[in-house]
Length: 297
Image (cartoon, helix red, strand yellow):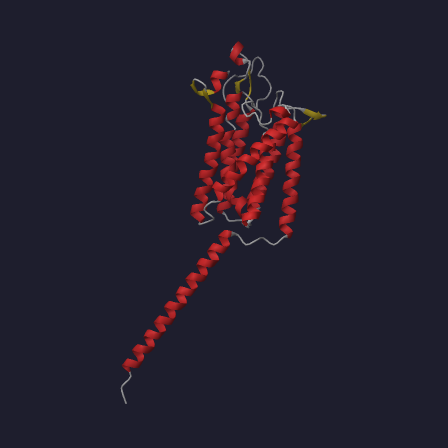
């Protein structure tokens, strides 16, 4: 199993595949957002700043909720060599951190989130492949008579001992959903719908899909809190309520003037000033020519 997840092994230096996929997902998210920013002439540091803020916040949230769920001990919170990252918790804390950043920078929250949604979901789609190398995010074991081919089924930890045990690849379904939401977000953004609609539609759709998929996943990380409710599902419900509260508050508040809007306003004022100066010069030139053409008395 360890060799399956190891991409580079140079003595004491180990580079696992799951870390590569997570890093690649972040890179894809930044690149897609940067492309949108450049095409629309938006705030150029938006993608990089969101990444700088979101990654550490997501890391704290992921480890915290992983400890709360019992997957890791609180004493191992800072021990990053011990695997354990709760994705819903990481996304919740990363989102809160980015919202605070947008408030501090006085950027339009709804507009900025719309810009980041396509890249975010494409990045999540790539990052989901980390589960493939960790043998996580899987469903029930595939029984006898079940066609055993990828992406219907994939490896389990037990497969590397008995070479037969495989399970349904729920992570692949997650990958498809995230990729589809990335495409939807891109289409909606190109249509230039009302600010915030892209983020609202795709985020709520993602949370609902994750809530359903959580029932299909198996393993010790899927702690049942009560009845059939899983720990991650409670986190997803909390995230959904946070989104709803945020939407209501933002709807009733006047949007702050964004750095992008200020930049465009300044440019428009400069252009208008230059046009006025050019017009004045043209009028003066025409008056001078008219006076020169008049016959002298």
